[in-house]
Length: 404
Image (cartoon, rainbow, N blue to C red; front, side, top):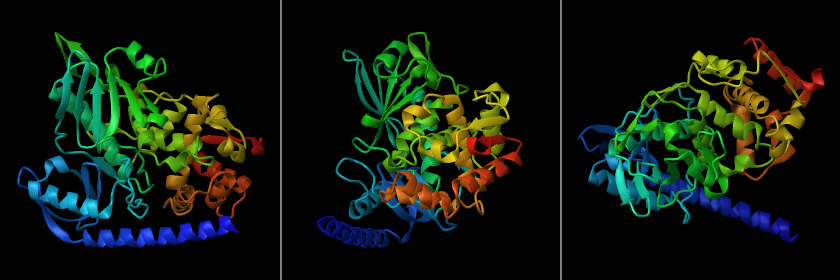
C-alpha cells in the first residue's frame, strides 16, 4: 500500500513539474530578434538553455543551437534570465529540458560558427592547461594555441549539435561549470594510465562523465617547440565516445544497453563528417560499407561481410554488456544495422516505435518490458523476419539463430 501511494504521489509531482516546465517555456516562447557579435540578426523564439548554448527555433521550424559567446550582451542576458526561470539545469549541472522527440529528422548538420576559445588556465608547473568552447572544457597536459584548440573544437561542437538535433532525447551529459569535460594527453602512456584502453583513439568513462583523448587522435602533432593541427585527420572513435557522453543515462539500462547504446554511437560515428558538417540524409551506404567492409575508401570498418550470423533477437537485445563485448566486431556492427532499422526502416520510417521505446526507458521501464514497447504487438520471431527482409533488400543478410 505504501509503494502504491508513493507512486501516485510521484505521478502527481511529475504532472506539477510538467506544468511548471510548460509555463517556463511559454514565458520564453516569444518570437524576437536575436543579434550576434557581428551585428547579424535573426527572428526566432527561445526553446531553452543548455549550458552555454541557447536553443532557438526559427520561423521555418528549424532548431538552431547557438553559443552564448557569439550573441550580443543584451541577448545573453535575456537568454540567461529565461534559462534561470526554466530551471534548465539542476544543481549538479545535468540538463532537465524536455527531450526533442517531436523534432524532424535532420538531413544535414552544419556547425558553421567560429568556435571561440577561452583560455581558462595555463599552468606550466602543474602541466595543466584548460581551454573552453561553447559546450566543452578541454584540460590538457601541454600548452596549445587557440588556433589548434579551435581546429579540433569544431568537431566536438558539430558532434554535440548532431546528437542534440536527432529527435531521440540524446540529452545526457553531466556538466561541470556548464561544460562537458574532455581530458587531452600528449603521450599515449599518460592516456593509458588515466584509463584509456591500449590501441584506442578515445574513451568515455561513464562514472566520471569524462572523455579521454590522446592528442594524436585529434590530428594534433608537434611542430618545432609547439603544436599544429592536421585538418585531414579523422577518427570514428571520437564521435562514438562523444555520443556516449551525450546519451541519456536511462538508455544504458537493461533492454537498451549494448545494442542501442552502442548502435546509436556507431550511427553518429559512421555518418559522413567533414569540416564541421555531418551528412545525415544519405548515410546508409556508408553504414553498409562500414559494417560489411573496411568503410568508404578503406577508412575503417567492421569487415563482417554481407552475411551476419546472430543469436536470436531476444537473447541479443537482453544480453549482459560483458557478453556483448566478448565479440565486439560482430556486436557493434549488428547493433548499428538493427538501430538503423528502427530509425529509418521500421513501419513508416518515422522512428515511432523506437521513440516510444526510449520514452519507456526514460520512465523507468527496463528489460523485456521496455522491449515489449518496441515490439508493439509483434513477436521476436516476426521482428527478426522484418529486420532480415529490410536489410536483404539492401544486399545484407542478417541471419538470426531462430531462423537457422
